View 1 (tube, rainbow over the protein chains, first blue to last red):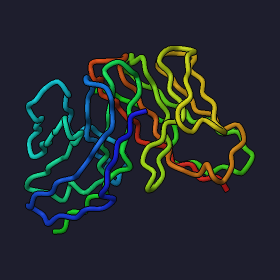
View 2 (view 1 turned 90 degrees about the vertical axis):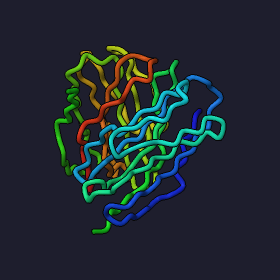
View 3 (view 1 turned 90 degrees about the horizontal axis):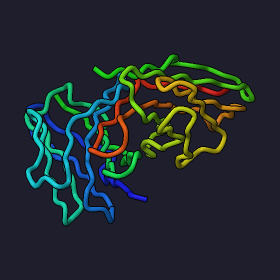
View 4 (view 1 turned 120 degrees about the vertical axis):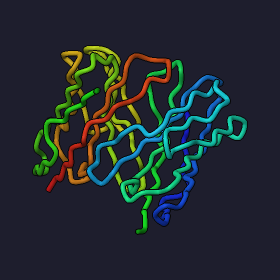
Length: 114
Length: 114
């Protein structure tokens, strides 16, 4: 089974600064999708950003961008101009193009310091 | 917008009780999932269903069962609740396999077993 590893249980960032959350994964497949999900204290898990493995260009959504290194099986999330509302648990996830399942990391808790 | 609704946000049950957690999605998604979320362990898949009356075990199915009689509804059943089942339970849905379909989550159900 695929595994997703988030090695940073907790991170903190000063408001308006930039922070990078790390994620690595293990797979033998060539066609797959990667996601970052955000879970604020209210607990609704929402999609932040999505990357298709066959696309070399890194996905970007406003202040959120990824650094996708397919050969290294690395998928990090960069949050620029951090805001108080970015404080949350962030989960990295993997989904195969041929399967129904999603595989999640253990999460990184991000604190934003005013 | 996709909406995944979990019927109960907070429940307190006694050891040995039968517990039902209900989930409804409104986007005609084929796949539905039940995850358990515990600190430091991330999301662990209990069961998922890719069609009505179809189910597959996830990583931690012991002590749980599921029911999917209608496409939009997926129920998680704790046959005899135990204190080690105190946790946050997340329901999710996604369109059919492939194309990196995004998974959508409900708000979660906090279950305490006393």
